[in-house]
Picture 1 (cartoon, helix red, strand yellow):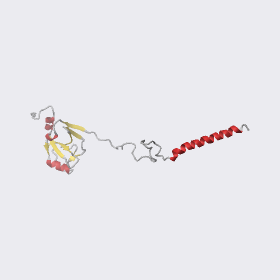
Picture 2 (cartoon, one colour):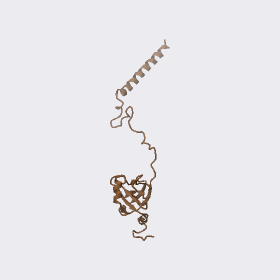
Picture 3 (spheres, helix red, strand yellow):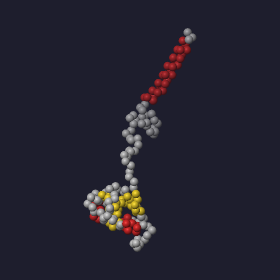
Picture 4 (cartoon, one colour):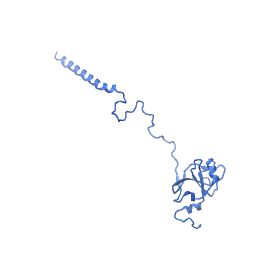
Length: 169
């Protein structure tokens, strides 16, 4: 009989431990899955997770390079000649940059898009551009587009090292 007594005591011990374990976990199961945190603490992730992407969207093609072609500390309004008709055509999307801000002109407090009259970065189906001019686009992708045209000689004058009235060579 002495051999059976430890087995029954062992069974009794197992039963009590199992019932105590169920009682301890039963309180946690009685609460909902979102009620298990302290007040003011973030709740756990709901079942099914959130509908958020894990990472920012991956662009299939990388952005093209962008080049600064003109840099000046002067105001852009004094850089060249305002082109009223071309500005109207730009607002109608008939005279525009092929890739906005691919080439940039940085003036005092303003960054403008650049297109060249010979066709580089210029969409001009009506052939309104002068091949010898450089066109600066301010707000080139909107109906408030403003176009200023400059020549290569004007670029030399825009250089901060030369005064505005420097003699031409």
